[in-house]
Amino acid sequence: MSGVTRFEDLIVWQQARRLALEIHLASEAGRRAHDFALVDQVRRAAISVASNIAEGFERKRQSSFAQFLEYARGSCAEVRAQLYLASDIGWLGPDECRRLKRLADQVGELLGALHATQLRTR
Image (cartoon, rainbow, N blue to C red; front, side):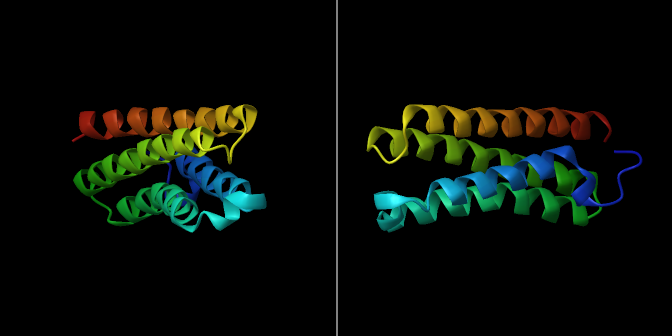
């Protein structure tokens, strides 16, 4: 990660932050806001993606960063799984669900690529 000195500079962190915001906004509206358990869980999982990227980066060791990228990727998969449920129960329409899943997929792909890079540079 030559040239990157702050986690805020990482494209993957920026996209994970965007994912958390989009999940938060999508879970505010209408009856979905009253499904406290699912709303809380999907929000926490989305927040966890960006938080794990930041925490791992700040540990200043490649092995720690790689491990936290794995945690972030797991949280990203959790977000995707919860989006399916949100769609199944009807609090996300098909278009909104597809849009959010696409964003979560993009974050997951970025995490996978960065993780592979970390493993190669050990």
